[in-house]
Length: 375
Image (tube, rainbow, N blue to C red; front, side, top):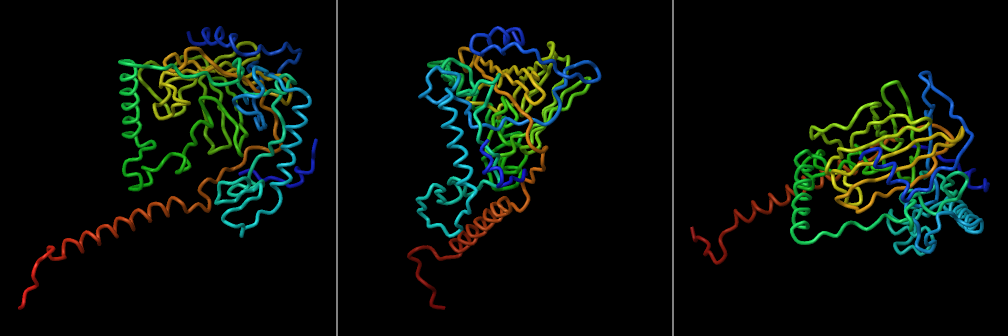
């Protein structure tokens, strides 16, 4: 996991064709630039290296900004100033003996309060509004209101069919040992994927959001494929170049990705998602189109479009810019010093033993109202 420095706190300073058509309906077109991306040996644009999307800009726009995609200078100053204040505050020592009802800003009522279970030393330094083409954005999404559109409302037979399909998807995911809750403490394999440090939800797809920490990615290109590696749990997505999505029923936890280059842009199509990786209620038939364009030595424009006619009436998506971080990808030692899984399984075995002992005592006891023998 990445090591942070306290010094920072003081430094205030149709498939692809359909997607291209749909994106224009909601995404702001990238501004023309004279920048020419460097090339790799086969002449393709060089997108490789380590990038990050750390920012205080949320995926969805807050309602008070309405339809405004861009912040005013005054808003930027206020937001970034407040973020820096938070970093400085969070770098202060957390009282390990804080009262149960802690009323400070840290609010350490268990591990869930601000800067308690994960204090500032563990988190990325989130102090800047995301810029795209130099514009400070109010949200990653570029829909009119900056929000994910409402899901299609089904009724009658269509609703019943959808519920049946959802149940089949859950059963399939359970049978394949993904995140089954049946006998959830019987074995390590029946615990969730995140709890076992195998995969963390949507950090790699359907789009790449940002979070508390480990927001770096590394892109590696070859003649036949592009690898997108995330610092979080070291998930790697392999994009096959020049191919098409499979049609034989194959499903992958993070979907199957194929791509091609359009000038200086890498275009990636992902589909064939596993039923257990539904995003915001999406169907397994959801597809995502991503575009990666290097727009400066230290900036990588990322645009995404989500297409799922079974869930949303219209495609939706957004954009942001990755930028070069300080440092590289670091080891995410998810299980290092983590005794939670061992404790969960041991606790379940103890409960079973107690239940067995209680059952044995009940079976050995005389029936209620029985008269003891005089012999």
